Image (tube, rainbow, N blue to C red; front, side, top):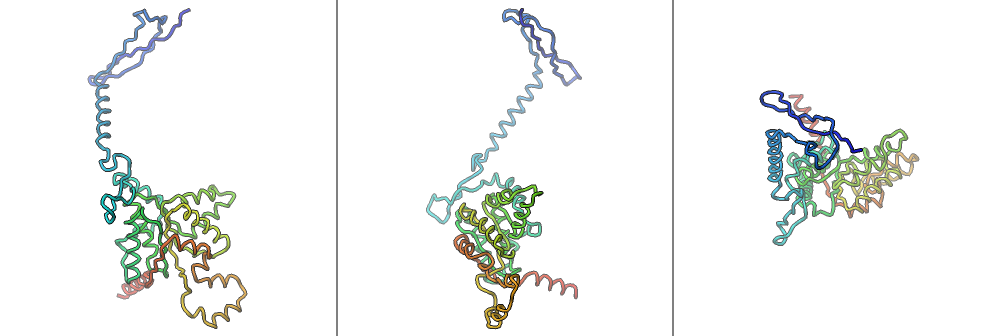
Length: 331
């Protein structure tokens, strides 16, 4: 028995004076045979509509071809020339300008920069002394030379001298000008997020918290040493920083703790006698005034190799703001 198949044909229904509607009509077919002329399917085409679609597709292809970047030829990267080196030398590959506008917004959102610091930049950092001028210079030079940079920065100084401001300015410049994926974390917040991941009801895991920290091309770790230095804190921070060290990831640190104790009075005989009389470990923890005491000797040794130490001195700018508010209120 021959196979009976439906025959498909297109019918055109006029819907108004200017538009045509195409409709598929299915009718019972006859036995399929190659030599039966009645079984040939005649396809009726709306030539006006199809030609418009063809022209539209052709225009899109033409626009796509014409929109290929003449600098990177669609690759998204270009070679950065080394102006100070030999003629024809290059510093390395950087993100092309054609990709920066889209990637910059995406990377800024992913960088976790706190809203209070979103406006920090090199342009609104106003140095008040030589140490702040040097810090500004080191930070801006890192951006200019990246990615030909092997060591990060360790901003050290008392509170309110602009350490976090400069660190975030570096992140923003790298994101906006060079399309680098960056991440900001306050060290205490990072440790808290890791601890929360241990909770049985938590919807995240330790590796899920740490993966962006490990993978970011440039990481700012703010307030290093601020958390009470338990063994778990020291071990965890060492694991994080050492992993980035092994992977040759650039890291920028800020800390309020120096390499030497502040004030000679802490080394006086009276202070030593007072220490010997204390019995509570919590009191001794508060006396850990150097960065090495706060984060441990192994990690401090690692930072010597990972970062260039940048000392920043000066008055707490927050006190100046408070004084200006007080003076304006009196006036």
